[in-house]
Image (tube, rainbow, N blue to C red; front, side):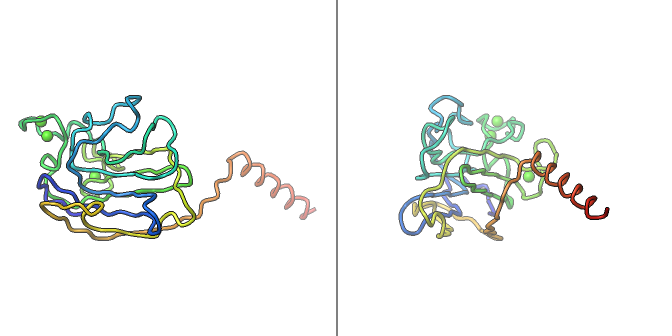
Length: 202
Ligand SMILES: [Ca+2]
Ligand SMILES: [Ca+2]
Ligand SMILES: [Ca+2]
């Protein structure tokens, strides 16, 4: 998403169920207070104050600790060193970051959602210069329903208005079939295969 760093913006790319208002994920800019979804167990970044770069995970199944409610409109925690020392706040906002293309992503598993923000979509944490992303958070939460995600939505976040817009490019939706196999089992399987090969050679 291209961000011109203007304030007060509410634009996102989201995915949800089309049949009922469940499994709402939205990623982009938001401009209002964000309630602490952990009920104070883990303080939210910036005490809930808007820092612009946001995500929303809403109307999923029951959340697991430390969540005590759905993480509806939260802000990506960003390294405090990205804040400009001369501006009036101690928050990392789009004005600190400046205009640029940023990559937002959500990985949805059977019992978790991982949300990531890569400022300048450069594969780097721009505070440390190390490979990775600028912010990543994972919540234990379970999608609901038999067709949990079949609607992609781009633009105003959940239909609200915004004083300015954004440009969106390169939306990727990928379904990954993952069958994790415990390492011990993998090693045991390989050992069994090696034994079988040896026996066959004899
Ligand atoms: Ca500052
Ligand atoms: Ca600032
Ligand atoms: Ca980056």
